[in-house]
Amino acid sequence: MRSCMPTDRPSARALLAGVGLLTVLGAVLPAGPAAGATASGVGSGLLGATTAAVLPVTVVGEADVVPDAQRARLVRVGGTATRVAGPDRYATAVALARATYPTGAGRVVLATGATFPDAVVAGALAARVRGPLLLVPPTGLPSVVAAELRRLHPARLQVVGGVGAVPEPVVVAARAAAGGGSVTVSRLAGPDRYRTAVGVAATFPAPTGGVVLASGADFPDALAGTPLAAVLSGPVLLTPPDRLPVEVSGQLTRLRPARLVVAGGLAAVSAPAAAAAATAAGRPVETIAYANRVPGFTDATSISARVAAARIAGSLDVLVEGSLRPVADGAHDIHTYAYFNARGQEIGRIDGEGHVTETRYDTSGRVEQVIRYAGPTPSGVPVSAATAFGTPLIRK
Image 1 (cartoon, helix red, strand yellow):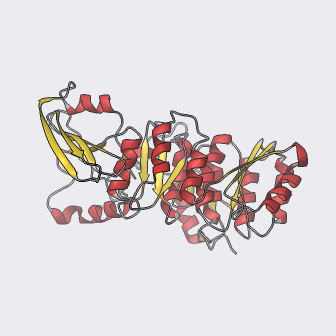
Image 2 (cartoon, rainbow, N blue to C red):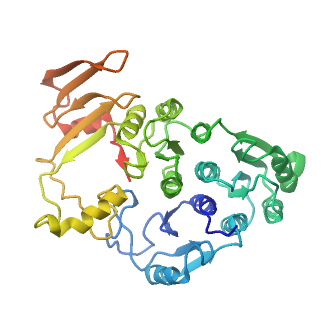
Image 3 (cartoon, rainbow, N blue to C red):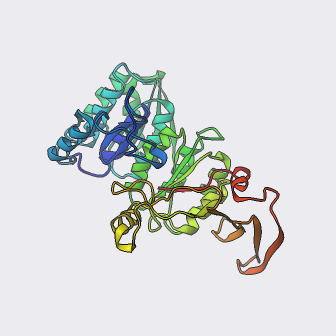
């Protein structure tokens, strides 16, 4: 299998995330502008301002993954575009390990290369322990991976996934290649991909800088979120599109992240699932009615391209065509904060004037009572409410 397969990609992104890098469209970009560069405002949102024409780029995978024509375009942006690749996903992971850990590593993370979920969540773990992520097939340890383990000579191997994903004979062979009996081995696994991700997240200390929540049904959003999780010093958690598993909710409550990022649009992570996650993490969902218009707005057709791009991106901020976010007006923008229970049901809302509406449910989940309180919250204004109740959920 060649490195164009989806499961080649988590290793690539995760390894480079381990040295504090972000990935964008197959390229790896540093977390901030180059020294001495002038920010041009190309990026926004969580990435912040980036700088055109000064971003060194690393292309991960062979030409069937990122064609040479695309690499040439990246050169025009970054000045250079170095390709790191191998003949298959396992060799590509090894090439990345050699590039990022040339003198060895104290820890190595192992995950299956046959499917994506374990490798995606293992990437954030690799970033945390400052070691490479190597992929292995369930059928045996590839010679190229064995050779790399001998070179890295780690003191600890961290296996992500159950024995069906990384069988014990593969682990035994990996330990022998890494150094034998002196190497400590541990395994993080659950009965499914969601609870395996929870097990990995449980190794992160609380509170954490951030958590990325992504769909476990497909790889692109979770993959794109892995480097961001590394930058936030937090894990990647997976969820079905339509609901938030109880175990994921519990882990979000334990982690108390300063930032909760939902990777993907509503089809990937539904509004109820995102709302339940925000509540579990102690974060309200914020809605902003801006007083100012969208930049450049004259009529609906004038921003149609940006609207279409925003629907695909699930964000107002990451559009090449221009942001849809209006200029903030602290005196006139109206902020509303909604709070949800684990079922995704709204249990409270603070409106733009600071008044609270509470919704109560019976044991069957039916609305039992709605109370709109006459007095405003003690904070009195939405801006203070934002300070009192924490940073809102961010969808990317």
